Length: 397
Image (cartoon, rainbow, N blue to C red):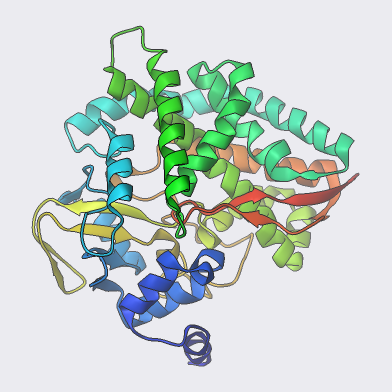
C-alpha cells in the first residue's frame, strides 16, 4: 500500500489515457517510464485509449496471452491513422516495414523467418562463440588502453556491429557508417519529432534501401524481402545488445551493492544479463494486430484493432515478479518478456544473451572497477530504450 501511495503521488493521476500520454509523449515518460507503467497497470492493465484507438496491455499474463495467441498476429498497421496520430509517422512506418517477417503471419512468416533463422540456431551460435569472445576482448583491450571512454562508442555499438557485420557480409569499412543511420531511424519513434527530423528519417531509410538492395544477387528473396530481412538482422543482431550493455552498466552504477556482487561472482553474468533486460528492457513495447475477435482479461478485442504490448511494464508486474523494482543480478526467476514471446520471439535473442554474458564477464575479469565519468545521454527513441553516450572510467586489474 505504501508503494501505491508513493507512485500515485509521483504521477498525480489515475486516468489511463493521461498516463499513456505521459509515457508516450513527455520528457518525464522518456526519462523514466516505470512509475507510470505501475500506475497504468494498476488503473487499467488492459485499456483501449481514446487518444489513438489502440489497446494498451501492461500486465504480464495479458501481454503473454497477446504475444502467444494465434488469433493475434502482425501486419503493416503499426500505427493506425486515427485522431492524434501523426500521418507522416504512419507513412514512414509502413514504408520501412515492407515485406517483412515483422509484419507477416504464417505461412509467409514461416518462409521469411526460415531464410534467416539458421544464423541464430544453437549450433551456429556455439560455433560463433570463439569469434565473439575475440571481438569482445579486442574492444576491452581498447578500453583498457584508453582508461576513460564513451562505452557506447567504444564497446556497446562496435562489438555487436562487428559480429553481425561478419555474419551478413557487411565489409568492415562500412560498419561505422551504420551508426548514425540507425540512430536516425530510432529517433523516428521519439516523442518530440520535428519536420526536419522526419526528413532525416526518410533520408536514412533511402540510404539503407540503396545499400542493401545493391547486395541482391542470389534471387532467393525479392529486393523488398532482402532489404527488410537484412535490415532486421542488423536490428536483431546489434540493437538489443548495444542497449543491453548501456542499460546494464547504468543499472549497476545505480545499484553499487549488486555491482560489487557481480564483480565478486563472475558466474552471475548469465542471470545478470536476464535481469538487465527485465529491469530496463531495451525494447519497451511491440505492437500486434487482432486477426479474430477474442477476450483478453475480460475485454473484447475486435478483428482489425491494434494492441500495444508494454513489455517493460509486464517485466515489472508484481503479480509475476517478487519485488519487481529491485535490481537483483542473481534473481532466480528469469522468465521475462524482454525478447517478446510466441511466434515473433526475438530472432537475435541467443546472440544478444551470448554477447551480453561475454561482455559483463569480460569487464569483471579485466577491470577491478568501472565507474561513471560523466552524464549519460539517452537516445531519443521510445520503443528502443538506451543511451547515445555513456562515459566511463575503467581501472585495470
